[in-house]
Amino acid sequence: MQQVNITELRNHLPHYMKQVQKGVEFLVTSHGKNIARLVPEVSNTEEALNRLMQLRGTMIKGDILDPVEAEWNADADNL
Image (cartoon, rainbow, N blue to C red; front, side, top):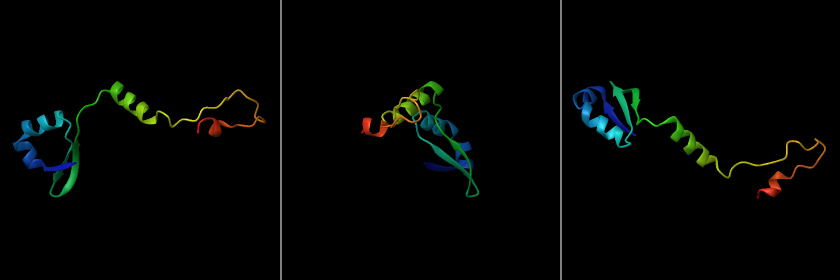
């Protein structure tokens, strides 16, 4: 993530906003301290789909309706 001083950001705001639209993230600083982050807007639907795609294949399935005494072998089934 790139850093930008708040004064520099104010003076060249259109330039930085175009960069953010392209996907670049900025950490805004003031007197050497982090005060904000500029990140591109992501739709909630797109973000949820991305999270689901990252989790794909990591789930272990099992039959939750089987009696408790039944042996659970979901790990073996999914390896």
